[in-house]
Image 1 (cartoon, rainbow, N blue to C red):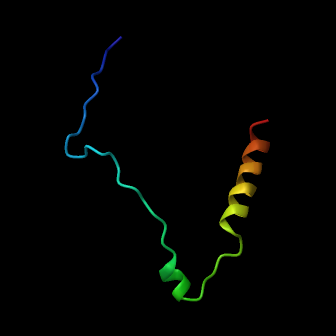
Image 2: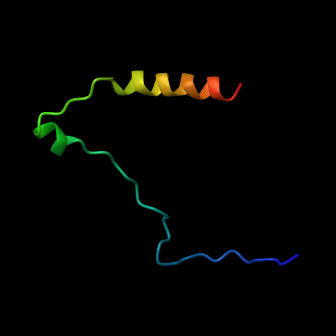
Length: 53
């Protein structure tokens, strides 16, 4: 068995920066969501639960 050491990249001490979703550009083109965020999350979570049974 080969052991490997953990290598820490000091150039990125805080890890990956936070990623935020911005839909303002596509909304300016006339697009709007059909499903509210809360409803979409609930729906996909229900599908996930069905899939793990």
